[in-house]
Image (tube, rainbow, N blue to C red):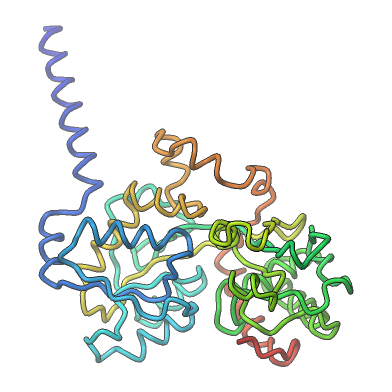
Length: 367
């Protein structure tokens, strides 16, 4: 009897293990259907953002039969929304299959009928508070707002938002996007507002606008979209951007110039980005296969290598799937302890305040 029990329990374990493996892999039918489509059209995925270059390369290597057509890598979330709207009736190469947008844009796109639902096989490990229950959009990764500082041009590294208002930073501070369209920039304004003590949402959005209005009036704000290139050239010596973008820029610049990445002492804001499949996707199966790739262990670790905290981070750490060297490459854990994760309602209210009020309150045409 004991032997029978052992055999039964071993069989059960093998079946469960096999099921677990099967569940985490895309079906042969999906792979075949995606290969028949032969193309995947992405948009707004710079290769130095969150390790996307390597993530895309891994997908190409895994599925060489599928051509990855990359549209406008430097687009913002609002541009992605418009690209789907503009190509509703167009099944050509200008129509995106998939989007990667700021959290506030997910529900907006669902409400406008721009997304189709799909639940990846690792769905249960994506935290409930960053995914749509019906599968129209789901969180992919998060980071915190930080300052990327050119140390050749900035002697005293700013440690907090209030520091950026000092006269010594005249003509040096930039956002990493247009705050009327870029999720990264919109949330940069929210973080500044929260640092002043305002509650996340509309209040912090308005406080952030006031902050950038004063920064602009003082001559400290530069109306140029800040990137590693503009930072190196000296056009934007201090750029407000996600920590993962700043850390990737540090690696790319490799000491020329030397840079410092600072998570500010207050207004530590965590920002979540979400994935979705276009309701009008010309290649819906390739889009689903792409999602399976992104949410697989390989895809999630690819983002982590790009200094992002992937959606399945906690579950994967618990399961011992995250190599220690990747954990060690991230900024110290204490930098994230004060991170505030705004609710969807707070993100929406901030977005409305910032997009609606930037021109009248700040009046700087960022481009």
